[in-house]
Image (tube, rainbow, N blue to C red; front, side, top):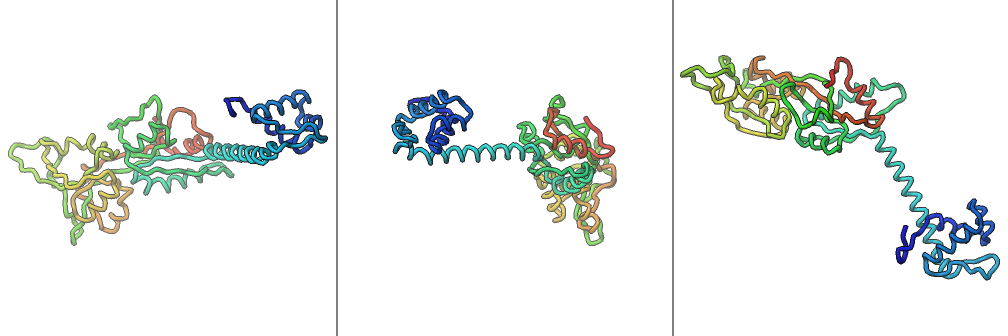
Length: 329
C-alpha cells in the first residue's frame, strides 16, 4: 500500500500499531508479534513517518497514544477488519466458482432435454457427491457459441448434425453425443385430423420434371442464428431449391423452435420441429405430421466442452453426462 507522498505502507505495521497501543510496552508488544524489539521499533517509526506525525508519546510509562494516534486507531482497526472480511469473501467466491457449473443451451433443449438429462447425471454421481450451483444461459445457437468462445460457459448443449460445421475449433473443443432427436415437418390439424398444410405425396425434393407445376408450401423457418436452421439449410436446402419439385414460400422466420411451434399450431404453415419438443402436441392432435419419413431429419444432441482441463466438479459432470452409449469427438 502507498501513503502520502507515495510512501510505502506495510500491513504488518498496522498490526504492530494495534498491539503496541494495547500493551503500552515495546518489549511486550515485540514478543507478542514474534519479532525482535529493534525491528518492531523500526516498524512503528516507519508507520509514523508514513503518517507524518508521532503516534505514540514515548515520555510516558507505559507509552500512550498521541491525539493523532487515538484518531488513527479505530480507522486502522476498521481497515484490518474489512481486509480480513474481504479475504474471506474472496476465498468463498473462489470455492463457489470451483464447484459451480456454467451452461449454455439452445432454447428448445433447455426446456425439454436438459432437466431430465441433468437428473440422470446426478443419479449417476457417486454416493455423497453433489453438483454445485448451476448457471444456465438459454439463447440462440450463435449466442451460445459466442459464450463458449469467450470462455464464459463450461458446457454447450445444442443440436448437431454430422454434415454441419460450427465455429468451435475441434483443436480447442470436443463434444459428446448425449442424445438423439428428429426434425419432423408438422402442421396444425383440420377437424378431420389431417394437416392444414401438407407436403404433396408426389413431392420428392428432387429436380423438377419438365412441365411439372410446383405447389407452394407455406413454411415457418429458422433464422441465421439458429443451430437447427443451419442444419435444415445444409441437409434440406436442395429440397427447397429453385429446381426442386417442391416449392415453398417462407411466411415466418424466428430463431427459436418454441415460437415456430406456436405459429404452426396457429395454422400459419409447416415447421420442422424437434420431436422431443412437440411430443405432447402430436399426442393431443394440436399438431400433426405434414410429410412422411422422407422429410424427417435425424439430429444429435451434443454436449460441448473445452479440451482444456475444467474444475473437478465440471470434469465429474463430463464423465457422467455422456451416459451409456454416448460417443465423443
